[in-house]
Length: 109
Image (cartoon, rainbow, N blue to C red; front, side, top):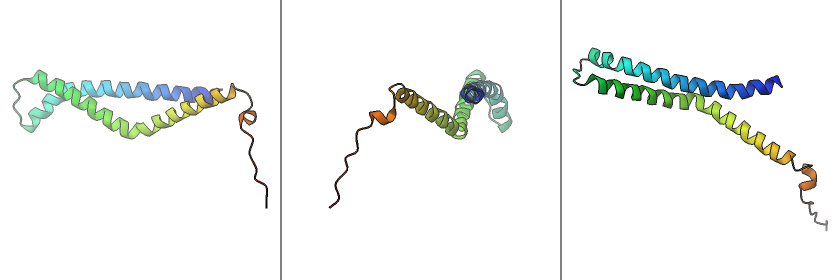
């Protein structure tokens, strides 16, 4: 019981942390882009546009990195859900041996 609860919560924890990472990276990109570009030596005329572009860029970069690093765990969770749905579908129909067709045996020569 507790192990299933932990596995179910694990999927929620991963999803919440991914959304939180995207939010934090977007905010960090919004506030950090203009100072970074000014430090490099660029002279910016429209700082608000560069802040928005920076926020979007940081969020997209974080999404790509998270997809590479956390993606395999999400695939495992998806496989687990598919197997669970398959087991629930088959367990409701009764015995699995009764549903299988009879094996035809060829006589020996």
